[in-house]
Length: 434
Image (cartoon, rainbow, N blue to C red):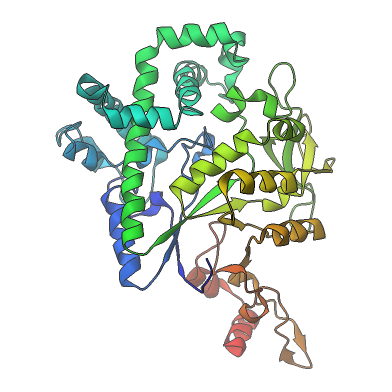
């Protein structure tokens, strides 16, 4: 990202053209074509992982796998793994908003059916075998994790449990006991293999999207959250990398301290990293995570980048974030090792919004990571001698050259929506600036 360029932030789920939810099939290819016709060169999306409770892409079941419900069933029909009759039910899904529960109920059985048909004739397909080999770091653990969830979370939901985390799992499985996991693999081998095939479908379709984007001159900006969900294959398969107790419950969770907007702070609930273990293993998990991200995207935005310099650690038993503490992270060592293994420059965009301290700035400057600016935050109404001062850091002329300017992020209203609701003084500031 060495020259000025522009693009659009639009997540896959919001793409038009398919029933129920946007997909990584024809809708994604059509959007790439539209970007190219409009002279744009960037497309940013939100995290691609399979969403858990609340359907937030920032709390996926895995930092590595793809969200199955974004797979395009029409492409599976074209490949012969589904037929049009199988997919008729999809057309009853709403077209103007996403009902995630309804989409999952309709799509997941179709994906399982397609995966079964794939295995009947293509279990030893060299491309599929190569995919499993390439992704062996995470694929097996993820498929086993989802298989266990399919069984015990359904039991929890049927009994009206508030939380579907692994409290319903047998203790040995919860603790990733080797024998218990191996026994599960033997008993549910077919189900686990089907889950791998579904991931193969996702990655195969996404590779075509990446190829088409490159042909059209569109670079894709991906997005990964710094922390992972407690209810994830990451925590289950690598518990030593997180601050957990002997029952695999978090000792501390991430968040942010109290501020003007939140007098009790924000308690996110993500388990914090055991940075000493990451460092001891030469950041292998992080490097694999970034390696995969660099295969999926041209650039990688990292949410809450400041957490690599220092993070707000809250005792897990606290219901609010007031009594946390700032603790140092291992950002310098991490990115140094990443550069050593993956090369440099690293294609990272640092989400540096909020309270940014000098150590965060120093970390970004050391590794030459661009930060973010949000235009909607720029017009604060500050005036000197009756004139709009224009000193806000988010005004374009005040932004550092190495910045990615957003009209708004996924957390904001659209620019048109923001302007329509703005008070008269803010509209006056905008008019004066223009």
